[in-house]
Amino acid sequence: ETGVTQSPTHLIKTRGQQVTLRCSSQSGHNTVSWYQQALGQGPQFIFQYYREEENGRGNFPPRFSGLQFPNYSSELNVNALELDDSALYLCASSLEPSGQETQYFGPGTRLLVL
Amino acid sequence: GEDVEQSLFLSVREGDSSVINCTYTDSSSTYLYWYKQEPGAGLQLLTYIFSNMDMKQDQRLTVLLNKKDKHLSLRIADTQTGDSAIYFCAEDYKGRRALTFGSGTRLQVQP
Image (cartoon, rainbow over all chains, first blue to last red; front, side):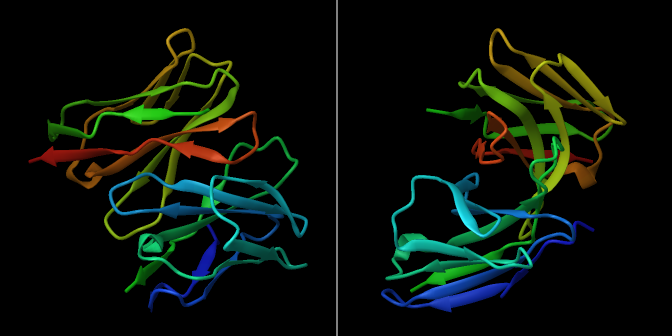
């Protein structure tokens, strides 16, 4: 049991809408990373939050944004949804800087954009 | 930029050993990981290796790292039907925890 939780588990939206996905990090972890996994592909890094600030970003447009709260939970917001945004969205938490090598993933939120 | 490549599919018989291979491009990778994903599920960390190691063994799992060729492999001994899943290798560039994943290898274990 990793302790990373995500909500909702599934979501259906239409093109042009906005969506918010939530992640609660494992107890004691202060860093959350978000990944997008399209069907049949490996996860792709979206961005990372550390101490409530963005700490690195992958190749995703600005309509992908995030927040991290004082309790280290995090939100991923996607505006102006496109069909290609349909994917499994995974968050992962870790403790930084710790020298620990493990990053734990949550079960994911499956988003379908129609 | 970073790139990770894996073969798409591997089929083995129950009880045999499985070897899943991965190549990566970035020599600055700090950690290299193997994750398992079952249908409809998230990612389960199987094992990892630090970039200054050549080999790591963890029960049925053996990871081999060839830094010169930038080649990583995962050997699963005595493969069971429950090992059927997609296996991803991932590199952690300079320890940033922003992982770059391969596209995954689907392991099918036949009884």
